[in-house]
Image (tube, rainbow, N blue to C red; front, side):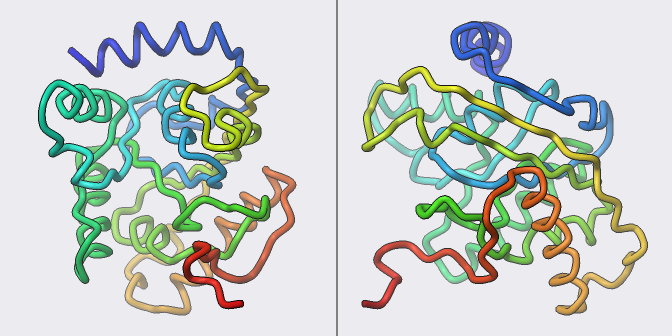
Length: 224
């Protein structure tokens, strides 16, 4: 019921209010397993993609978002579930494996799974080197990979404002990438890196962003 409300009631209202410019939506296959590989600029990227994609999209979400108590906790858990979040425990050494397994389950059910190859939001406006989890999923499941470029989402909550403001939003869905030529080679680190770099190259062309061949680090991870 919550997912219906989010997708078919809140979605049209949000689209009418923000009027996002969406290009290439026909590139999302109507059926079958699909990976959406997105650049990441803002916390609301997930909501934007969930509300403009014609198929239901699943994302990873921290498990603690789903365990809050009281009415607030219930509302958050059901709202995130309605947006397509899949709860995953990210607080232990097996978090990466758990995330990949969650993605595989979605794709095995012929669903649409969205992933941010950069791993975290870009704070400097550049597109950063992608982690190879997206390649592992693509190679192990055979899912088509659709690169998705988001523009303007960083302006929705400037200065960490709580209430999103009106902003010009654009989303471009690129041509699906087919990696069937690497079938059975997902165990090769070199192949995983090549596939990931091809995805990031497609995102660079779609976004027009400057590319940095280094992983993005959180402020706490940077050295002086």
